[in-house]
Image (cartoon, rainbow, N blue to C red; front, side):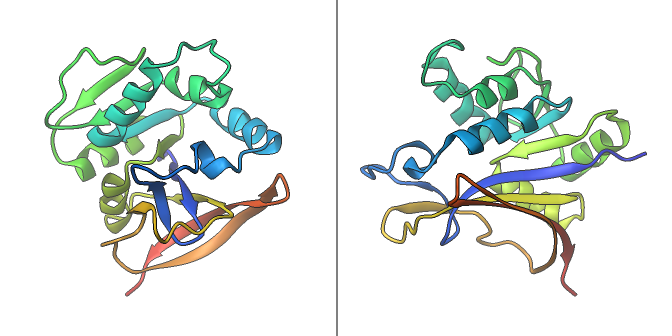
Length: 194
């Protein structure tokens, strides 16, 4: 049986994954609420393996190194994510990594993730890792695209367009929920558009 691969990403309404220097939005664009945080903690409490590209791994490792696990600013889902087993697809990073149970896989990302999908006995999840996941989507390896859309437009300060340069895809909506009365979580099954 093949493990399910979920590309999990946060987005502004206009499709940006983050804001640039000098933007004063704060984490979650200042729109997190208890329902969102509880839902994320439940999702990351399940057995799964994380998959990161080098850029996202470095960003998470740097962010997490600056706050201890029990610090009030660290959301429980982030601590759970860090404690899950992880594979980092990279030709530049070397072990050991500053992550409790992470390994580096060098080589072709498509081959690495195809092998992980065949060998893993738990689902695979990638939070962020935009260029990696665009490549995996084009190869047909992403089973679910989970987009959490925050109610903001970041036209002036937005960076990291989530799907910039991606191929065309048809999306089948398989789950949708509203969190805290304002944030949308949409889960799609992507199919490469002919």
